[in-house]
Length: 555
Image (cartoon, rainbow, N blue to C red; front, side):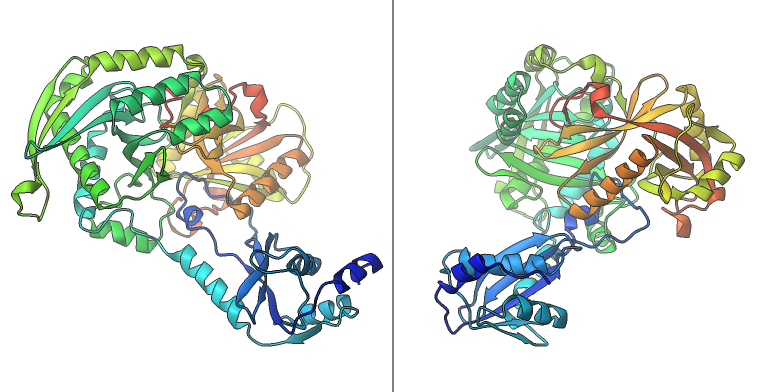
């Protein structure tokens, strides 16, 4: 057992010892809801159950305050609790003062014996108890907070917002409009209160699809100017935070829980709508960004989406023809279930060709390489396909090389090191899998995959999973965020598997996306097998990409 050295003991003994009782323990942190939902994430599975990070707490039970807290990996030893305990003694969290307790309580027998040995010269009693009331209460609050899913929008506005979002998804304006084409929406309530929004459609590049409603012309123009001028990552993050807008975007519904799906069904959202669901939120220079709305914001966004849908119904065919001339529509919209004359809005919606031309010029003058951006697609992937970073044992790999009809083998030999070959699983139906394999053949096969650094429209750093085809075009298959330690550890393990094989990994295209084989196909389910390279981001030379809607991708 490692003991405290003499100088440390002498230093600790100089601190006052009070007749207090402390509690100490370590608990696994609850899994983040954001990553359970799977939004913008590709599930990662290496056939192991990595534990969540653990939180160490030392609290003063007599005073009811936390003295020290630390987050460690699940494999950290008992030394981690001692380190946190020493911090609680010498450098406690405010307002606690340095000092030693008379007694500490722990619920782990092994920890009790360990702490007794470490603290035997400090005159601190270590006792075992079945329960730690204060720590139990603290962790109960943490779990409750983690599992609380605040409503995205107020209940009164939710049905209308989801209904209009469904219509927006079916209209799919991003198939015909660029992100520099602007539509103004003027909301007039009894001619007394005017509110003009500036709508920008996102998604023609194939990433996040939806509409952003800027709350002023100045905010939109200034944002685009800053995007064109800022070069540093810090500058771009600050640029994102300076947007003043409401938005509705669409994300994959694949990872939503049954309770979340049930909630959307109650709002009349068709949960089988191509595997997507809407998110509603706002950005403001002083408030930052949040993926939920308060009542007044929800009312404004609901009116804005409905106005845009009415405008699209009237002029969508003209916009689809490729002409973005000046067109204007006037509509009356009443807030549902109000019955109040003040709830009737007169709405004026029109295109702004001059402003659109100005923004287009800003885009062309920006620092981004349109030629490289045009290579990024995701339109080849089958709807509702499952993407998963995984590993296949080497005996299964040997079988695939002999039995799979569509097979691309590495031109150079590589070591079969480790337990499994790291690879990307793409699972869909049989017909769609065969169609995807045919498309890959037309592209000249697969060169490799790459994880390229990027930023989301909220300024969050991530990596884009890109597949490099034989014709050098790039196809996006996932976005990977680093905030979840469990996912990040699994992905590091996956990358280590690639290092073991000298940078070679696999792509497995399989059928059987529904049922028990989902995510874990049998060898006979795999229809396409490719041995490819894990390409380093610097080899692509794309730099840090900006995930829409940060206006950094155009087809």
